Image (cartoon, rainbow, N blue to C red; front, top):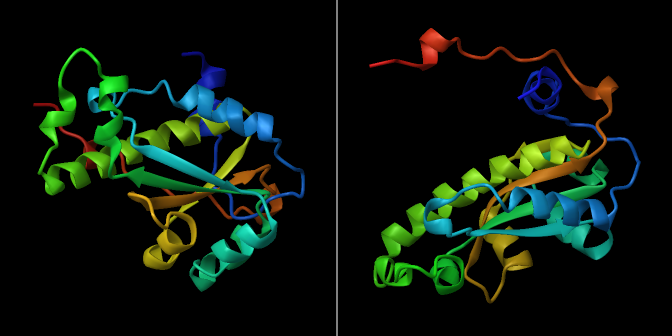
Length: 192
């Protein structure tokens, strides 16, 4: 990977809490998905489901679900992505993993379904952020919302449950604070 790619995706990228009013096109959102969908998941289960909120009544419904500390940045972002996990992902396995009866692995096992959906939708959420950054967007991923209320507002009648919310747009550098430190290799890793 080139140093420019590493800088774009990791070293210079920041979590943004403020955004410019520059819009994000639907075409860019489609490109984002078309890139991120290729990241690997276990048995290609691909449980991530995304609702892109761009304004109007949907934005108001989302704001009603957010914690007070997340309201203004959510309101300001041109796009808010609600990243959910589909607990019925096994129904798509005959299509996505056709060379084995993977659907049967999950039948009657809600704990395995929950763990697999959460783990793999989180993994796909990471791919989502990297794809957004590669397309020139800035991201503000966050928790800090009423999950039950958000699920009722955006996923009612489905098996999809929210994992996290990610604000998208073009970040306002003036709204950034100093970069927070990270753990060193020796603090976070062991080679055994």
